[in-house]
Length: 102
Image 1 (cartoon, helix red, strand yellow):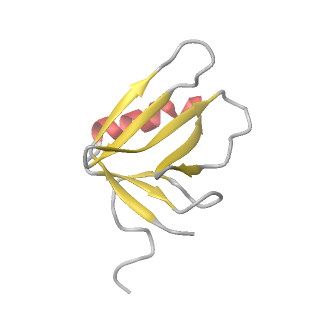
Image 2 (cartoon, one colour):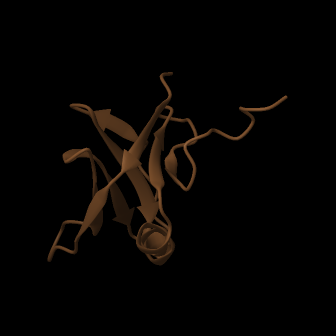
């Protein structure tokens, strides 16, 4: 699995009507880098994926407030993607836990 850590510069919230789940679109360097997709609470979440160089991370709707608060209040923010089945998410530091000084 390839580890990627990308700085999040901006985001957009999309709360669609009907069948589309709420999403937060993420941009880095002026380009789309991925989205956070919020599925109904209690539903089985699909595996996180990378499609055409953009990461899709799945959360339950209960997690929407936590993620939007992080994006609004913390800086810098990073998108972490290890791969499907890995620990993927958004984080406040570029360094992965366990790296750095010995």
